[in-house]
Every structure is written in C-alpha cells, then in structure tokens.
Image (tube, rainbow, N blue to C red):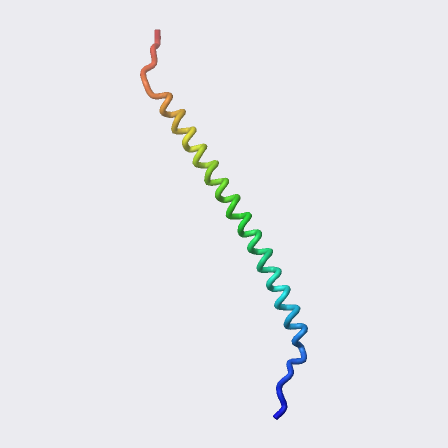
Length: 65
C-alpha cells in the first residue's frame, strides 16, 4: 500500500515558522504593554498619595488676624 505524501509540506513548515514569529512578536508587545500599565499604575498611585498629602496639610484653622 502506498504511503501518503503531503506535497505542500515546505509551505506548511514556512507558515508554521511565520506563525511562531508572529506569536513571539505579540508576546514582546504584550510584555511592553504590561510594563507600561504597571508604570502608569505606580504614577497614578503617587499622584493620589500626593493629593492626599496636600489635602491633609490644608486641614486646620485659619488665623484671620
């Protein structure tokens, strides 16, 4: 009995390599996005803390004299 030979195996292999490369590129972009989101979160936390510190500093009585 004759065995099956897939004549487009090189095309399939090339396609698989391109998909793998695209997945690696996507992983790099997603990692960079995660880093930027973390930096943004830290900056927002710092901003919120600074606003809170300023608000706490403004509490008290004002001497009108």
